[in-house]
Image 1: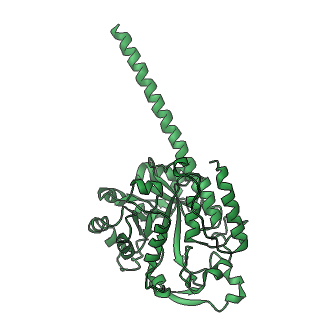
Image 2: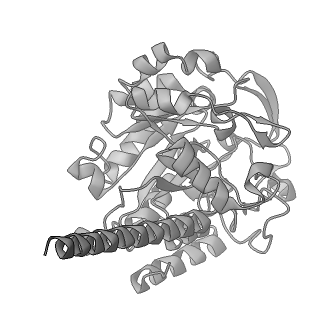
Image 3: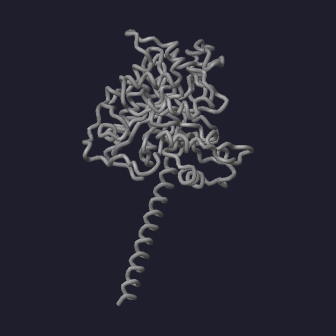
Length: 392
């Protein structure tokens, strides 16, 4: 998908930010709403999981810019906090795996062990670093089999910087932020006014004009989904904003981090009936929707149909192009996987590491549907002509 010229200066700014390591505080978008192509709502959402992180290190400005260029409907991020209470975009509670923190001798004494979701975890935690310190680090690719050329080029970005990227896109692009590990954050980060992590999260969204229930005029202007694995956080923020929320669901072996409920409990009809008062959908790990044995798909569960029966959308995660992630049924073809989940399972959105691939699949499928419709119309016209001839 071609990028807009008006997006180029902003991309240049982001590259400067990545090199300087200094915080960049966004200005409101200068694009008039009337000049922007609206969000598409006629097909499952293309959700750029941590940006286009199959190509560029996750949760960086460059990964999000690339995802927008490639056709993402929503850019997705995980929100954590720095020691000084600034909300940042980062997936892991520790910095070890996707930054160069180990190379910074000045931080060698920062390694800690904390309990994270019932497991003692050791590493360099974001909550032990100020924003300035976090900005001195550089991000790298999570997987060694992905392109390594961008390692060390980009910094961790703030929630506000992430929002700026979406607002300054040449078309309407939604955001999909996660309230990440709220139990841990609320334990280790204290705000002066006594507010919670969830309060700061919603305040940031409101500051930049995000509001409105799903498909409302306000929502379509600046679309956003709030996601979390913690049901108590989703219920809490429901009293703060009417933005639509998605309840994330982990593997069948992992209980909820805040309520210690099992997978079977939170996917029961009784629980879906309860949680639908607070959320518009669920985001399950895809291998729990369609179980896998020896890398082969098994019989799909009824989770999608039951969720739809409760008027809940289903946005599974995560779709990845590499052979190591594709099940044998798809013959190493990511398009075949997308086709299966969209047309056979019937999901409403897909979290993908490869935004461009999903967009290309959807565009190709749209053209195919258009061709089929045109062919059908032509056949109807021919039938009508033949019928008229027969009556003459």
